[in-house]
Amino acid sequence: MLVTRRRFLGIGLAAAAAWGGWRVVTLLRMPPPEPVLGGEPVGSLAPSTIAVLVAAAEAVAGYPIDPVHYETYYRWRAEHLRGYRALYERFAQEADRGAHRLAGRPFAAASSVVRREILARGPRARAPKTAWDRLRVQLVDYDWPAFDRFVLGETIGLFARTDAWVALGYRGWPGMPRGLDRYRRFPG
Image 1: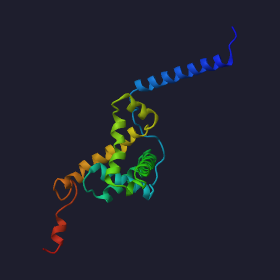
Image 2 (image 1 turned 45 degrees about the horizontal axis):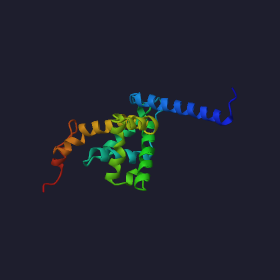
Image 3 (image 1 turned 180 degrees about the horizontal axis):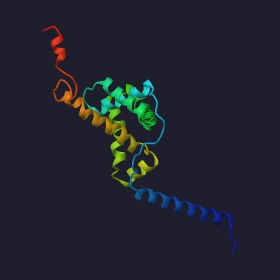
Image 4 (image 1 turned 135 degrees about the vertical axis):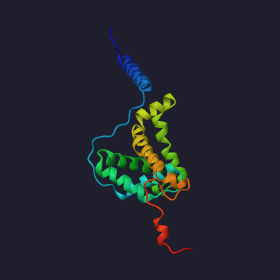
């Protein structure tokens, strides 16, 4: 049987479409990837990366925070734990890219509404609800489950252990010396 070029291309196109459809179905059936840290080397963070991380902490907390405390936390993790520096830098790039796309400015300079909209990708990537969400996480937002766990989740944990106490009305969080500065101030 003689196969014409048109028939050959039609068979090839049908085979490619079938393979693509099978690949999409396979991706849709897979559970979301388990976020892991890489073994990248430790090092110091750029000031722009720290500004993005602190802005993300302000957006996640939704309350006033002590930015110096968060800067110290992020710097220590980047300088002492493998994988965090690279993860923080990737997070800063993704957040800045999203802020430029939505507001035309860097993430640290964006409004709190824009910041929250960008950071909402984290929980959606952690627990995708629909098949399209799972496909988006597999193909586009593959870093966001790690960002949600190691950046946003740890930031919420730090907020709960520290600044949430201040938001509840305490003068400091447990383990923080307080009260002695009142004796050194002039009454009034």
